[in-house]
Amino acid sequence: MRQGLARRQKLMYLSLQRSLSPFVHSLLDDLDRLIGPIFLVGDALRDALRNKPPPDELTLLTSHPLPHCLRKIQDAGYAAAVMSNKHNSLLLPLKRKENPRMVEIATFRHRPSHPATVAEDLFHRDITANAMAFRWPDGPLIDPYNGREDLDNNVIRLVNGAQTLREDPLRALRFFRFTLQLAGKPDPLDLKSSEETHPGQVAQDQVRAEFDQIFTLPLRDRFSQEMVHRLFQSVLGQELLPEFALLRACPESTGQKQSAWENSLRMLLNMTAPTEEEEVSFLDLRWAALLHETGKGVCGIRDAHGALLDYPGLHEETMRINAALLARLQFSKRRQRRINHLVQNLEMSHPPTDRALRRLIEQAVPVEGLFRLLRAKREAMPDPSSEETLKTAEEFARCMRRCNTTREAMLRLRPVDLALTGGEILDMVRLPPGPWLGRLRQTLVGWVGQDPNRNQRELLATQVREWICREEGKM
Image (cartoon, helix red, strand yellow):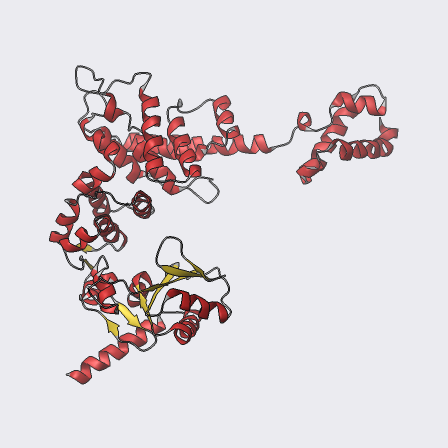
């Protein structure tokens, strides 16, 4: 029996090694020689055991002090290695287009009264599928919490139940994230514990990062959408984003049972991903969908049916709340501007006039993203008929075509855009006006269109003189 177990382990190690590219093999062999023994942990190990390509980042553990590791790695020619600012680790960027593009090297985490070992480090991890370590290159696989079995059965389980959450309440949000990311079956008791977790004073930038990772997932299947609803209905979700939780008491409009909270959540889940040509982030579109009505949660001005009234200050209240929320979650200034820009312009008339469309494009507003938000908002309304759904899709397609046409027209150079006016050309050549002037200006437009940097007075003047010399007999 022991021989059979050893044989199965050997086959697993061979399978794990085969799932990693020759580049990764060579890199890990090199690092094992420099700072070994090293242990492969985290996403990279989990993906390798599932025969999936490696993620962006490899995570390794070592028993050596990090300054010693940094010196050894840099002396070996890895000059890009640096100490990390945020974690007790060092980073080794890899100059390559394929994954992995970064290696993170950390020392063992441990309690003050416990020695620094691999097993002690795994005790401090979130879910069992992440609480494994593989001693490179030949094993063993260290798996004190049966993570391999949970991974095979697609079960999402906390390493130490509620104790794991007491050590770090943010792990409750990660429990939801891994359940969605791995499409796993959450352990019922651990799911209940995560839902009931009070986050307390967690790092706000980490909260944003976890929500960002959730919002980058497709979230289109029924299971994912149910899990997202459970997250925002839970004590955890309500305390992490209290501004959004207030919308649960706000009817979306007169006579509707659906709350503004439900409408915004459905809008987030209905969002379609932008194409590569559209200069807008899918992530920021989803944040804009979630936050586009936050002002309704605090205004409290309702009609006789209990629905919130749209009064002049409602939109300003939404913008004020969102500005404070995005700053609290430590969004970058650039992302704050993008998300606020999207929410601010959601109030535009739809479909917009040609003049309004040009104005938005000139102001660098991601108009295609606005159309996607408006479509998702329309589709978020309860029980739309098939005719309404088809009409919305056709209207969206027309708006996108208008946007493309308008952009192309705005990018097209016109004679009036030239750095040399018609009057200046007449003064230069001292000829009476006539049809020749229009032909000359169109020629200049074509010449500048080949290279916008040519639109300079001196260069255009040279082209004018050359054209007059060539065409003098035809004028």
